[in-house]
Amino acid sequence: MSQTSAAAASLVRVSVSSGTRRADLGVPGGIPVVEIVPELARELGVLDSAQASHGFRLVAGGGTVVDPDRSLAAQGIADGTMLSLEVVDPSTDKVYDDVVEAVADVVETQFAPWTARHSAGTAVGAATVFFLCAAWALFTARDSGALVAAVAGAVAVLLVGAAAVLGARTQSAGALALALTALAFAATSGSAVAAGDDLWGRDLLWVGLFVAVVGLLGALAVPQHRLVLAAGAVVGVVAAAVGVVTGVLGVAMPTTCVVVFVLAVVLGNVLPWLGLSSSRLSTHAPRTEAEIDAAVPEIDRAQVRAQVTRGHDVMVATSLATGGAALLVTPQLAASGVWGTALVAAGCVATLLRTRHSRTRTAVVLAMTTGIVGVALAAVVAALAHPAWRPALAVLLGTTGAVVVALAVLAPRTRVRLGRVADALDGVALVALVPLGAAAIGVL
Image (cartoon, rainbow, N blue to C red; front, side):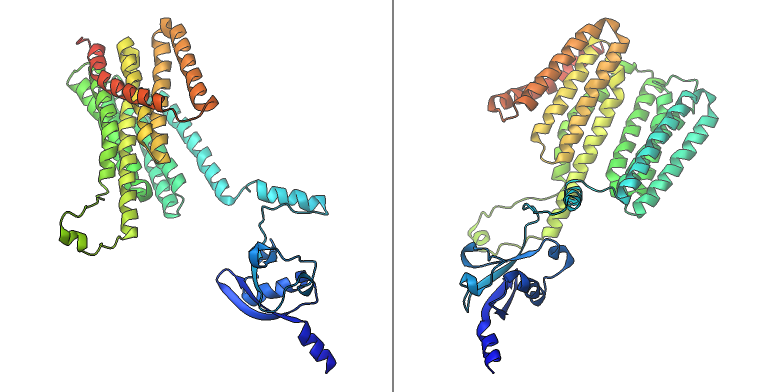
């Protein structure tokens, strides 16, 4: 009878909570806390493998951590005390008695493991590189005519089918890579249809038609990236239009390229905002007393998310289409002379400065990629077509790179005055497109 009374007297009646769960328990007050913590976690239903590996601790009122090596009674915890059972923060310093365990913990927490998903992505990436090399090899043999056209066209269709299979298996990145690779084979197939024609002429008509058809097939096969592949089809339509105007109607190639480039840059700065407006989201400020007193309509969050996502996808697709069209005609403009090169530089500056008004990472990356690739492509073509420009190009590009590093890397901070200069430069670059284009075609 005395042993039962002593055991009851040693119990401490406390309230233990963990998250939204709570229990009023009588726990032994004379044994170390570390021995009763697992039972408390099991009683509250929070003892799982993920949390148990980190451990638990008891926290009393005021945020005081209960010493796990001492008993509740020794720490002055009496009946009616509120305790909180918390998971130990895994980021806190740990004490090891085995270096092997310490090394294993570092490897587990600091280095991302290689998974089957990474293996699949690497395999698709390697296959894409090999396919692109094969497309280039076929392009160099386009003089063979119908044979190259048939082989490249068949590979393009097979790649679209493979992209559809990957898309159905929720491997959207691999599906997009194969579908875009199919566009390269489509261009190769189109270039071999009329191998005797000039590539930058009537032959461009077939290239554009084949790219447009395969792009539309890819958009149907990979619905997750429908707008991206449709943008590739639009670039194919632009290429076909250039081929018709220059190869069939006889318009000079520099003139056609100037018109395409100016339209692409201007539309690239306007159409993305139209894409955002396609989300059809607007606010209606109350104007009358009845509207002010009326109940506020409920906002459907799922519908808003869907509309914003659709508007963003349209913006990305228009940026891809206009950027691809501008890059398509960049080599011809850079090879045409100083005014064509200056036109490309102005258009790329306007595209790069457009990123100041972008919020999403995708929009910024697209504009930056288009502008940087355009400058690099123009510089390489100009250096090859105009050997006398090479020293000046080296100095100009090197100076530009040094300024970018100094402003964006060594001293990265917001500069209000520099922002105003960028606003003015953006306007000047857009306004200068028309006179530079006129000078490039010899009107001025």
